[in-house]
Amino acid sequence: MKSRQKKTIAVLTKIMPYLSISLLVLLWFSASSVNAELVPSPVMVFERLALLFNKPIMKLNLFGHIWASLQRVLLAMLFATVIGVTLGVMIGWNKKLRLTVGTLFELIRPIPPIAWLPIVIMWYGIGEFPKVLIVFIGALMPIVINTYTGIKMVDPNILDMGRVFNAKNRQLLFEIAIPSAVPVIFAGIKNAMGVGWMVVLAAEMIGAKAGVGFLITRGMEYYDVALILVGMLSIGIIGALLSVATDYVERWVCPWNQKLD
Image 1 (cartoon, one colour):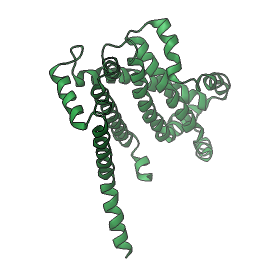
Image 2 (cartoon, helix red, strand yellow; image 1 turned 90 degrees about the vertical axis):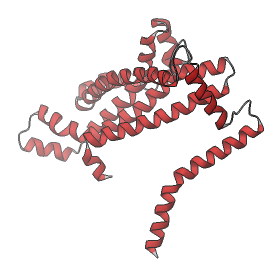
Image 3 (tube, helix red, strand yellow; image 1 turned 90 degrees about the horizontal axis):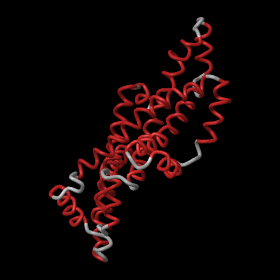
């Protein structure tokens, strides 16, 4: 009996994702039948997607605009990861830095990344650098927080054991604390990737000439709802692929974490 229940649950687990997507498509068709001008059908969106390849916008098809957005996110993530992990480790490990830098960071942390947009544009204009800077600010926060939390969560008994064996402070940090915090740090990087992908779209809606956010703005300006949906679907698909890619990197860097799961 229990075996049959397990098989039923396993089958449901496999089909539920496909069932939810099918339900969404059905609801989409239903909404488009009411007002196709406001809610274009999936077929109309696919036709708009094909048109984007035949008649690129700003000389770029969909892949070109996605790559423009990805370049900004990946560049910002590179700097945010290096600086964020370093800052998080310093704040988590050193009490004096935690009281000074950590306090300042706690004051800045609640400010949403989008709130920085006006002042960054006033300082640096609407070129590439301000867009990358906004993404960097948005991605930095979760990386610092998770790194700091990961360092603080290290079991003190393990550190004490290291001290018993005369481990120096540098060895305790680099050979015990940081390796123990890697899974939590990766959770922060994964979260930062999602935040960065969302923030770059907002940044591209102001003064960009390429990118998925630019496509959505273009669709809004020309009342091209199908183009807006093309941009939104691209955002969802690329965001999901980035999440999967981050999972693979995490499994490669810290396989013991997956074994625990």
